[in-house]
Image (cartoon, rainbow, N blue to C red; front, side):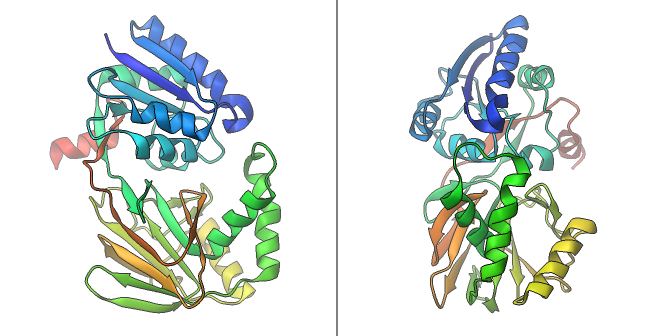
Length: 306
């Protein structure tokens, strides 16, 4: 019997997370799984339950919520962690979309019981775990603006409109420098994005070289744009056709790096504020997580023929 712990974020997706958690529990129970559903009461509660989920007692942990919920659970899982499965229920669900994971309770339940998984590396920024990306500069200023003005659940992507406009009007200036693991430096930057995914924010497409299949390496995107017009052109290309390295940004691949700034600049990880520069980024000191995927997932087929 497969033992499943479901951790649901009650405010994710304007209440959609709890409904999907109930649906997933019902689907798993009907298929013979032993299910515990815990609607979390706080971020600390979420982290505590994830951290206590040993593989000797639980086979699969399922965070039900958005990307922030997934990051919190993944970062708290112990070294001998159970398999991780996702029940996307947030605003963007970027990681699930990037990895082509199922989104309906019946599909997620079947993927869990199939027992197939792919490795999901965990990274750290000054000791704080993350799975997808870290930004320093303009995008982090927008995240900080959103969090400082947010009251209650985020109302979808519409909730980003005013924070984006306020930051654009203020036009914060940054002078960032990225130092790679081989000693190379890239200076005079207005924005730095460290990423494992190409689908940024569920809206913008990064260069095609960016892929989550890059092992334990990170992709470093360096931007020199400084005026509103330059940023507008870059954003429109990212939305319409996707960014291109050499035209819109410099692209590097590295295992670890540090970001500094002449004046402390805002930073964010996976869409949540982190703090300010300087910041050091690299792989977490733990094995990759095992992420549940359907039996017909393309990454499994690539592994069989790789």
